[in-house]
Image 1 (tube, rainbow, N blue to C red):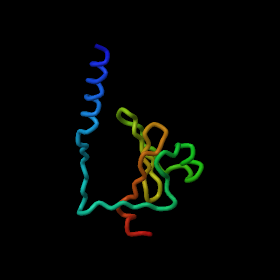
Image 2: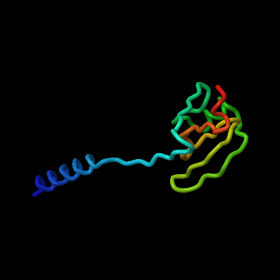
Image 3: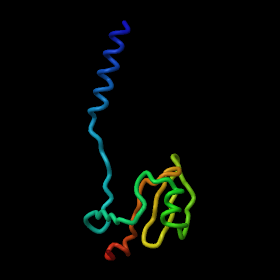
Length: 99
């Protein structure tokens, strides 16, 4: 009986792994634009590293939700954290035209 249970669990795991993934794409005024600058925080950086490299943010917004997501605003971009680690850096729309 344990062998049958193992086979069933393996088949269930394979079946779940092959389900199609889906995602929503937010479109604002046309095509999405990815902006990467050499001098911006990157995914996975710890907040202490961000402060040591980029200084104190202009504003810190408190964490919301579960997992806790917070935002720090710098001149021209915002850094989003999950807990203590960077998940995204977003360049504000007004700054997209600047190099």
